[in-house]
Every structure is written in structure tokens, then in C-alpha cells.
Image (cartoon, rainbow, N blue to C red):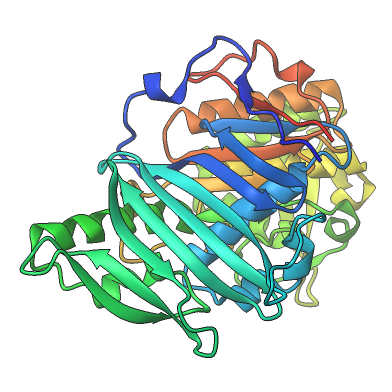
Amino acid sequence: MPPAANSAPSSPLRTLADRPRPDRPCVTELRLSAFAGHRRAGFALGPVTLFAGGSGCGKTSALRAYEALARLGGGAEVGEVFPDAADCVPQRARPDAQRRRGFRIGCTADGPEGPVRLDVAVQAEPELRIVGERLTAGGLVLLETALRDPSRRTVQAAWHTAGSAPVTRAPLPDDRLGTALLPLRVAGKTDGQRRVLAGAEQMVVALRSVFACDPRPGRMRAPAPLGSGLLLGGCDNLADVLWRTRAECTRRHAQLVEVVRAGCAGPVADVLAEPLGDGTVQALLDRGDGFRTALGRLGDGELRYLALALVLLTGPGVLEVDTAGEVPAAMQTLTVLADGFDRSLDPRQRRELLRLALRTAGRGHIRVVAAVSDASWAAGAAGPEPVTVVHLEP
């Protein structure tokens, strides 16, 4: 399979190097050196990025790689992140003399420390483990790991010290990302150690706050149990979250009503949620003339539109995400990964959601990486930043 095409921003053309350095750490490049159907692929990511192409071109696998890096950055074990790791290995990859096969992914996180690069090599066969990792900034290797003894469940790690010894060497477990472990292993006594900590923390903060969503209308129609009020990735508990957010923030709820009014058929005076007395809550559209429409009566497109609008208007306190609790929220950026962003949506709904995404991303606290079948409708979308469109070929 040929390498996927690099990103091509729609209009106007503006490279990532031209943009001012972000105050909040964020991922600005995704690299898929060898992952599923991608080889030697690198994708620039803007505040709003659309991966576009037909079925089988690798849109979902690109989002999957991003989510995997985010979960590894949050400290998850590699087995939890890749339960089907063999499917991530490029199809034509041949095993070496020891029958080993694997894949390689990476990213760049920009922020106050400048661009920081992370590249990870994962062995999928014969046993799953992280066999290599490299964290660099400004041409300096901050951390490097390598598998020296396959019989041990550790990798040999070396990180920059710039003290009495140029590097510190120690074993790290082979089932977790070393970058995420550095704050627990590096003392921060020398300038070199502090630089390592700053680079690792920027990468981890950039990766941590990710919400992967793909609203499933079939599960959104039924009343939802009253619970934590945290929106699930499939938006199954949409009614429960509406019950919470309507009371917590009237300003954001008013914005949601305005967006729903622009994308749903018929008049919309309000978006409501009401308990049914059996421990569940149902969501309704108030038509403003004494009639209410239960969400169960809405079409798939209207339900997906409403759910995605709610995602874009809320944040980590409402979405089920793993945030960096030790970092103030003002220094974090939430990244929404939306697979099938345009699925079941009509042209008006797509445009309204894209405008909302651009407007929200313009404030700096949210970024959107989405997969669409075709991005021609996104050309000329107005916002503080242009839409970054990545065209993929099967």
C-alpha cells in the first residue's frame, strides 16, 4: 500500500511553522512510520483537522493511533491500549529471524518548550511490548530506550542529565511509555534533568486530554440512567448529561439550543431533560408551542448532530476523559477525536458543526481531529484558523 498523502490545508495555505507557539501544549503532528495501512506517513495537525477519504484509506486507523498515544501518555499498559495489536502491524511486514513483528507511531507536541518529538516502537509478535522510545527536543535526545535482553521484561533507558555524567541509565518496564514515567524517575537537580522533565511533561499534558467519540443514535433514543453526568464516547447517556449541563451553565446551554435550532428540523425553543421516576431521564426538544419531541423520534443525523454539538460546547468536566489532574485546566487543551464526523449529517448540519468547531478551537481550549468521507464542503469555512484537511488515498 503506498504512503498516505501529507496534509493539505484548505484555504488559506498556512504552515504550522507560521503559527505562533501555543501557550498550552498540543499535538501538532502525527507520525505513522509503520501502522496498519500507513507507512512513512506524517500529518500536520491544526486546531481543526479533517482526515478525508473513502473507505479503507486509513482515516480510522490514524485516529486510533492518536488515541493510543494519548492512552500511553496517561500511563496505560500497552496491553490495554492494543488488545488486538496484530491488526496494527502493516499487512506485508515480514518477521525477523526471531519471528518479531511490530509497528511504529509518534507525534510532535508544541508548547512553551518548543516542539518536542516522541517516537515509539511496539513489538506485537511474538509478545506485546514497547521495545523502543525516543523523546527529542531541539535536536537533543531527552530519553532513549531500547530492548537489550528479550528474556527480561524491561528496556534499557538513558535520559539526558548534563551533570557529572552526561546521561543516566536505568531499566524501565517494557509495558508502559517511558516518557510518562520520567517525572517519577528524574530528580530535576541539574539543568539537563529539568529540561528532560519539561519536555516530558509537555508531551504528557498534550496527549492526556483526549475524548474519542462516535455517537450511536440507536443507543441515544432510550432514556438514560441517572448517573455521573460524564458523557460516554458513544453518547449513550446523552439525556443524563443534558440533565446536568442545563442546570450547571445557562450560557453554554443557550449556545447549545442555538446550535440545535440551526441544525434540526422544525422550531426549537429549548433542549430539555426530565426524570421519569424510575431512575432514568429522557431528553426532549421543546417546540415552543406546547409540544415536545422526545429524542427517540429524531433521525440519526439529528441525534449525531446534537451529540457532537454538546461535545464541542462542553469540556473535560463533562466528558469522560483522563485529564492531567496535576496541571491547571487553563494550561490544558482538550482534543476531540471524532470518527465518522459527517456520517448521517446533511450539508447544513455539517457546515454548522464545522463552524462551531472552528469557533470553539479559536479560543484555544479545544482541538478537533475528525474523519470524514469527503471534505469538499469544508472549503472556505470561516474561523480564526483555517481547516487542515488531510487527503488520504486507499
